[in-house]
Length: 74
Image (cartoon, rainbow, N blue to C red; front, side):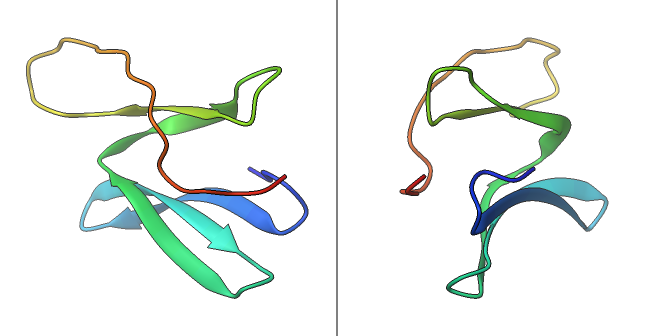
């Protein structure tokens, strides 16, 4: 998913799990920011936030949380 003209947010498969990655094409860096994520991530309307699901435990319970993972500029 394109976050802006230089930053791509992607999921990569590592050891049978998905990891959320920030790909900065201008700086030529790739940063893993979360492990065991779901297949879907989206920008949140009227904000600079991105939503995604992350599996914490095998409890079957979903939690909601908001916090900064990485500083980006639009």
